[in-house]
Image (cartoon, rainbow, N blue to C red; front, side):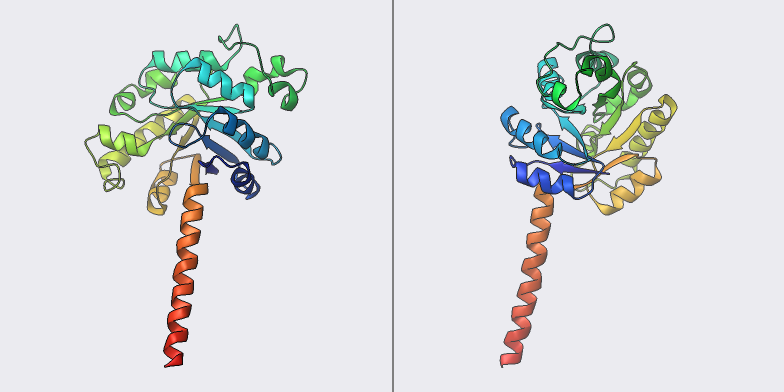
Length: 246
């Protein structure tokens, strides 16, 4: 089970990580976080047992290596559509001879220890986002790339490429058929099957289809939901008191 961090706040990340999630996904793709903010967030997560995973903004080796050097134990890249895309990503996560990652683990030597070079390749979790119909069609070819740790499926972008609405059609049978086929491919290839979860019914369907890593929300959603729940509760309390005053 994973929690998400979107805010440029080490304190918010610390609260999420201490909540008991197995992993915390730090979002640099759609959130207002820069590398400096990412570092502070990763330092906060490091004080907890949660595994820090960073989603970078694109499948670009310098972005991947920067996240790993800062302390990410897993990296997610978006929009992987071909085997070549996946191969390039995995190479950027691993040191030679398995890959092409450049040496410079500024924080890696702190959290990984003096033998970081010997252990890094085995401890890094490379995750790709499967979020297009094209990727679904090529899923077996993509997932057969050596060194890939798993997927983190993006249902909203996948819905768009299937001709569906990214908000209204998230329970559409065509979307969930595609998701089920991708998760089945993950089992065939022995890689982790994860995905972003946009709601309780969606989660129920995804878990039944074999999802192994799911998100249970993030800092922004938790704050918003908590604020709305508290406001509704106090409005009801005030209304009840006003009724009694009459």
